[in-house]
Image (cartoon, rainbow, N blue to C red; front, top):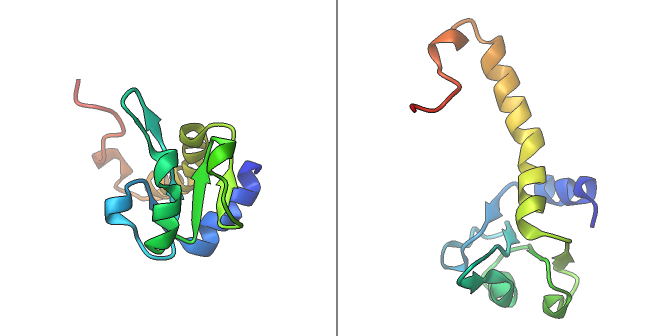
Length: 107
């Protein structure tokens, strides 16, 4: 699925979940992977627990219309977050006190 279509799904839901133990009903669940885990295996569980969509990056985990296949789950989540953070940053920079809010780390 292309990022624009995924963004529309996010707008429809309004929330993102990445942990099936803390599913937000009606959210988009992103199955992330790491060196010791593969959350694609939890996509069905996320849907059963109330997620509206489950975003996976392995075809074998696509089970129904609520499952969305992307090339890379983490990159899809990062691309999805970009428009949101651009809006937030733009609002902060327009605020008269924006110079009081550091926009960098502490190191």
